Image (cartoon, rainbow, N blue to C red; front, side, top):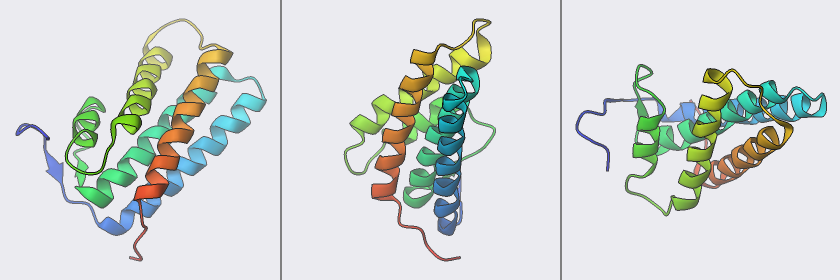
Length: 137
């Protein structure tokens, strides 16, 4: 359940399809970057793909956290009431861990790490697709 300090702002439910579309676009970018050996770009696109897919579910089910809040609050929301989300949470936490590595560590992201993030993003997107039913605006 979301903490009382977590601010939820209403989001038009019709936007869930847009977030899912963004996740698929980021995933395509990740796959293209992987094919070209751009591991940092692969990883970061996979991160954005996973986050956008999670947004899609949250928009459909409970609104969207304020953009000023960090991604960790999304974990709290995803862990909230609803259908079993334990598998999605595992993948989402891995994506967030990858985000920190790519953005805040000086070392370069490896091929293995990038490919693992792509797999986590693909699993989050598959989960989101099973839960999100886009609504016409």
